[in-house]
Image (tube, rainbow, N blue to C red; front, side):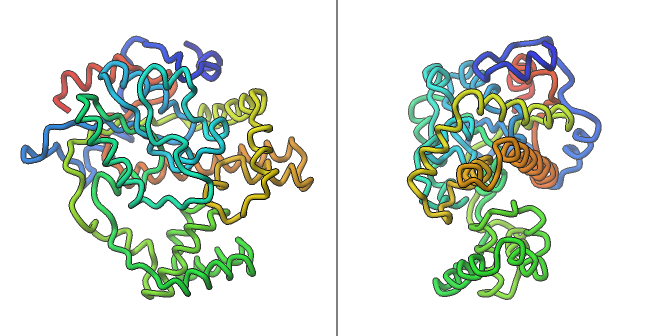
Length: 353
């Protein structure tokens, strides 16, 4: 399959191709020396959870769907924005046809106004994993929210809760100062967290600032400490999609254009017309702020498209950086070509993973 045809192939139409190289030299070197990589302990439960992750638009959903069909599995969402119910097209949630092929859970289950933390997602995902095993199904986690996945697999960072008044003050500062000035101030104390947060992510910037005020330590330092509490008691097998940069840039633009052609404007406009509170966390979905600005008359549609694509590309780059430093994958698949289901099936069958 050539690049043009793969870009236009819907997730439900993933194809099987002859086995391809599983990972490149850079990834293989990183994987073998990663300090946290180890085979599961014999003491761990033998219940296996498949994890499919990678940057946005890399083909995770298609691969997860194919694996879930092969393994009699259930696809469990591990993408923060896909948890919200208002933007199924904008956030590239599975279609009705795809959901009919295998069960999909934790997609579109929260209103835009509800905050979703890594700890809350861990609880939701753990319940779904238990349900899968109770029904003799294989859990297939799918998504690019790396912190959520790490929290599930390794435990939760022991970050103290800040007093409510500090949170209120931090929110007021964001509103009064604006995002750019707030980020500059936060970077003076925690440049690491600012470097990995999206500029418009009010919730996480405010959280980082309130933790600094409450503890005098950067939230990045808390997150770098050993996780608090027991890791999940299952055996995780992690598969990472590692797309070539130029391919992914084209893929992101092509996918957004397909959304515009497919009716995403009315979807987003329906939410805009309700005058939602701009602080709602579900409004951070890529493309929503830019299209809202278009509806207000602040951006042309062409400019909204361009900025949304640029922001999504920047996010994908941050995702790949995070995955390289924080994940210990069992298998890395280079993209293109299309994710090769046969290669993954053979790996899972023959490696003992």
